Each structure stands twice: as C-alpha cells, then as structure tokens.
Length: 316
Image 1 (cartoon, rainbow, N blue to C red):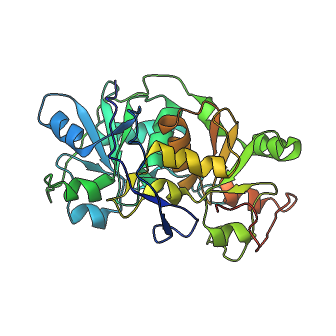
Image 2 (cartoon, rainbow, N blue to C red):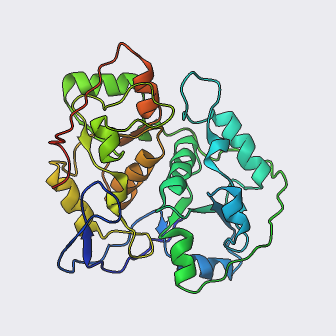
C-alpha cells in the first residue's frame, strides 16, 4: 500500500500557461493533505534503507541517467511504451508489450513501484497512468523527482543497474476508467456534458504553434486550456503545488470536483500528469486521459478544430 506523502506549504501561486516563469504573489495556504500515490524523497530513502521491495523507475533519457540517478533505479524512456505502427504518434503500446517490457526490467508483480523524472513529474506520470490502467496498482510518483531528491541531499550514483527477466505479469485486470477513447471525446464535444481539458501550452492551444507529429494546428472545439505545468512549483524543486492552489486554479476555469473531465495534450503525456493531479491528488472520480490526444484528433481531417488567439478560456 502506498504511504501517502505530505507537501510543504508553498507561498507562490503559479498561474497562467506560460510555465514556471509566470508567477504572482499569494498568501501562504494550507499544506497538501496526505494523498495516495505520491511520496516524498525522505520516504523513498527510508524504504531503500529497509527490506521493503521498492522498484524505482527513472523515466529520463539514458544520457540523463548516466549523469546520476537514484541508487537502484532502473532507467526507461517513454518511447519504450509507445506504439510505432500507426499513422500518428504517441499512442501507448499494447498491454502485452508493456507487460513484456516490465518483465525485462525485472519488476515483480507484488512490488511497489516509484517513478520519477526531472521534468516536474510529466514523464513519470505517463508511466504511472500506464501501470494503473493495465493492472499494476502499487505505483507512486516521487514528489519533485530527482531535482528535489538532490536538493534534499540524498545520494545519487553512476552505477548501472543490470536487469533480468522476472516472469512478470500484471497482477490486476485493466482499469478502463482512466482512459478516454476518440469516440468518448467526440461524444463529450457534441453533448457538451463534461470538460475537455487541453493541457498543452498557450501557443499550441491557440494554433500559433504546432508540434511535430500534429497534422493541423488548434484545439478540440469547446475545450478549456489548463497548461499541465500550472500544477508544479518549478521554483520549489518541482514539487506539486498545494491542494488549495490546485483547486483555486480549477475553480477559476469553472471546473468542480464532481465534473467529468477528459484531459488531452499532444500525445497523452502532459495530460497524464493532469490526470494524476486531478484523480490521485485532488480525489476527482471522473477523470480520463485521452491517449490519442491531439496527434490522433488532428489526423482525422473530418474532425473539427478550433483556433482562437484571444484565448478566452485560459487562466486569469
């Protein structure tokens, strides 16, 4: 069972969709309450000092891993979990391929997994989402990732971790409640029942910028902009913002705790982080990540797109 973590109070409230540089002053708010699936560096260090069978996944490119990683961590990059047989990019690999990959990494079905990165938890959250969906429930994000691990003085190593097959199999069945399909997104757009939450940058949302892999600029009509980075205090070692600030941001967009929300981004990575924040941290029960995201939507030329440089649905 994941031991919940506790975050320190954060004085700066990061708003807007321009990333960590967009700040405004705010009063000190209450610290984050204990949440499931999120642990602190001190907790992970304690686990590693005992016989607790924690499996640590470093979700960064191999060059970053070689420059120093948490002792015992196994490296994996998100490309390993991604399909390459479709005309658009970013879709997650099949359950069988992911299971085989986890087997090759040496994971056991009974182990607690802790995932981290150096990008505010974005890449780690994608792996968290994949494991949760496919049936490995015991998975948590390291709050602040390796930047906070280093800042708090915990050790790093250059020692490569060798792995061998473990005979891994997913311990639980698929949980489809965290997944949104193309048809679900189309239905939400048409009915206007639920929130389509675009977690990309302001420029991507407006159509001013189009990332490689997209087929058209813009966003899904009726979607609301919430840059995933708004949930991260990049000036505080990349920890998550406190829950009061997170709720404030969502309320500013008109999003309520009992709303049905479908998150999307370019290829389901940044939106996985927002899915983590809304479901695991804030306890919202009806949150799904659209795996195909903008690469799939923009590929289908018959589907409508919307571009609006005025950005009337952004954060204040």
